[in-house]
Image (cartoon, rainbow, N blue to C red; front, side):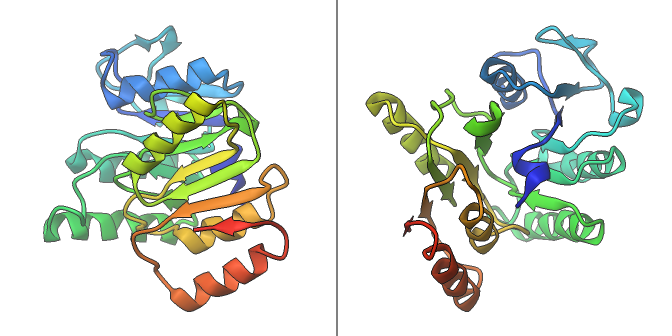
Length: 236
């Protein structure tokens, strides 16, 4: 189970903003509005507080370890933010920022660099270029989605942030409960097989739903799906 990602006790938001509408503002606001009970640590060198929370220029200034880092800084600053998150004790990192392998070769190299850094330090990486992660079982909305779904037992993994947003809108319109929602983005490290395996052993999740535009390893994915379906339905 990816506990540091799905059940963190503390979350640092890199690129936290005081401006409504910016991704860094929406992530902090969503964490607060969802009722996340752990520490929310906005990181921004130009702000003292954001949404009533003390803001820090970096995690060294915060002085305490965090479990999860959510990164929403400009593309060129992501590498530095990832390094800060790792040195701040983060065991999982979600990179929301876009502009990597989906754009050009330079972006692909930057993406590979942050993947190498995370993997070498044993840190789980989601993204980049993703919507974020939601866990209704943990009152956690670490995303810039427009709303938090009510708690339920259907968990969703999606390679498309736009489709995940549409699922959230549909769930709200139909009062449908959801469990864990993961936007995988570019899948630099963690991919569909990792999340399928994690959700298969997750007690809250009774049904796994996935939207994929590619599969990193067909053989591994089929094995994970066969194992998962011995416990619960899988719909991809």
